[in-house]
Length: 119
Image (tube, rainbow, N blue to C red; front, side, top):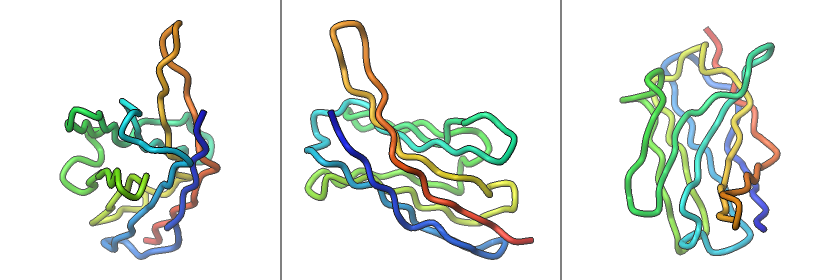
């Protein structure tokens, strides 16, 4: 099991930047997949970025070139640097960890952090 705690959300103007942090309760080196998701009001939760322990990271098309996800294993943390923010980026952002099980994997989620981009 793992507990995830996000921080760093807030209110920012269009074009601004924010850096989200997610700290895990255990060493993340052994966690193959960690990611950031977001959910806007009235919409389904969607993938923002997915980081694999082997080093690759995938991004949603809507954030490519603007968002960067990074891992800091020594800090048991992952980060999401968000630049050139747009009003459509407004959402609750959730940190996710996928832990392997005998049946496949189990999802763990943080409590979420609100990001609001004003126009």
